[in-house]
Image 1 (tube, each protein chain N blue to C red):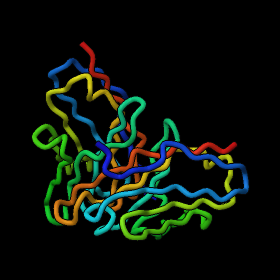
Image 2 (cartoon, each protein chain N blue to C red; image 1 turned 90 degrees about the vertical axis):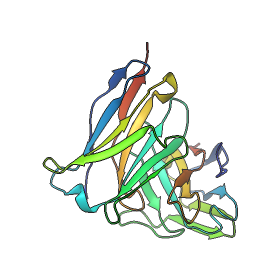
Image 3 (cartoon, rainbow over the protein chains, first blue to last red; image 1 turned 45 degrees about the vertical axis):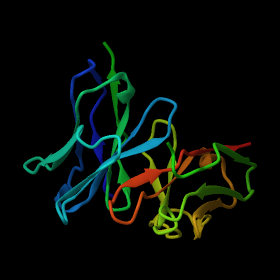
Length: 115
Length: 111
């Protein structure tokens, strides 16, 4: 079973950007669809974006078009999601999920946006 | 705005059968398949059911899913204390864009 590794907590100022990695040790991410989902404190899951390497398409959630960048470092087999122009509303746990059905999930990266 | 509607809470006693509903529309759920995810606090969410009624390898058979029209359901039989978690349904927002949406989640309490 593939396991996804995510990084430790991040604290950012409003207006800044945050870049969150997602790695699957011993597994190549390059052929797998990957999603990013977040959960704000006390709220439910919110789907953000999906990149499908099969067709090279990136699909964005309604609230994130223009504010999210997804890419990867093939040399380290790490996928990244970068969220720009942070506000306090972006304080959340950010999950990466692998596979077309969001089959496997990481344990999340906490991002706190505070002045 | 949550376009997939779930009850905020559900409960049951050990051994009972519990169902959790997920209501959508003709464009969401009606024209697409539904997945269900289990999320324990502080843990990675887990895919429980995909394509309406399929269980990934390793998911016990007491978890089952179904879909009818613009609604879907997750059933858990032989309820166990470890099933206490929040359950989310998810589907494509429409059949063309590839966008996904989640339901608001249902917190299941095992009494």
